[in-house]
Length: 161
Image (cartoon, rainbow, N blue to C red; front, side, top):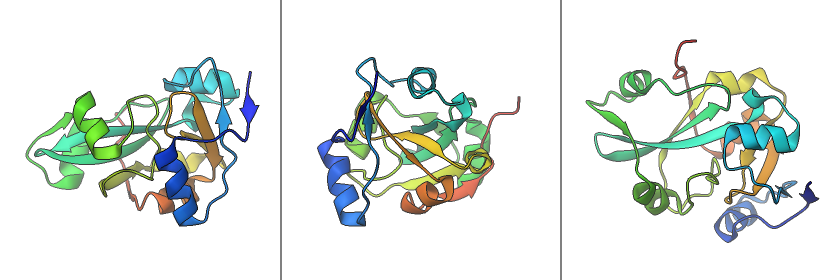
């Protein structure tokens, strides 16, 4: 069940206003916390879901945007950033950096400006779906537009199949 035109997280709503965006934010009461949950609720391919994942590269937060059907190759992220060590961020660092809880992180509109990498796999679709700041809200957008709003650098950071 979906509820169209539902308000996103207040921090994300503020970012949308600042960017002049009027998105089709949808709410799914059953939740969209995982990529699989989101794809099932929306009725789209798993690869059309954008996962917003926070890592720490030499202790500095970095956001990686990955398609929902793939995993991030941490070694590829390390090489891309020229870092010595890249690890998955814990929940506290995620919330401190983005302003959102894991399972609802949007690709842009974060509390702090963070370096962003977007995997090229996102460009394989005309439309992708991303979290709108809560584990129940999502929005559709063309991947090129989403990558632009996130100020993301395109990268090949998908784990080999």
